Length: 106
Image (tube, rainbow, N blue to C red; front, side, top):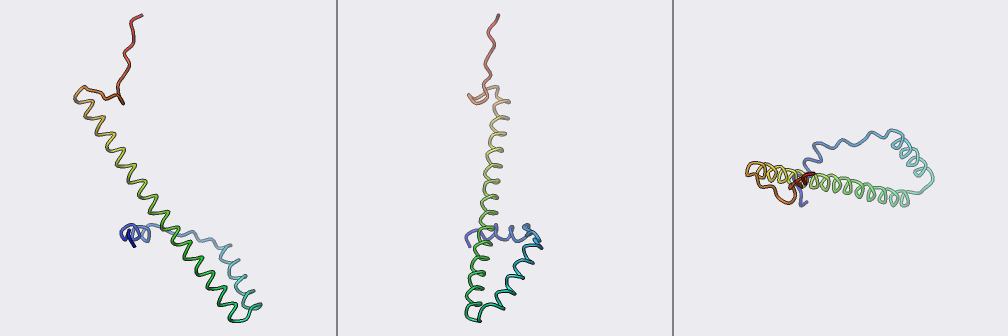
């Protein structure tokens, strides 16, 4: 995985929701499938469920990493903004971004 550190952060900080109602529904459907299907069909359904679970996990990790990268970039941008502002204030030279329009005498 290209972002090993971010995956480790995900594993450390992400706590999946409990979702007891959904887990109960899954268990009830699983039991119904066991009763209704033969072993080869059950195996196929379980393979589909496992593949879907992997997609959900990969999507969750990708979402965490994307959010972390966005937060990092925003943090760097805000830091640059603060540094520019401090330099401008110290030198008395305000960039176009910070220039104030002087009021005309009335």
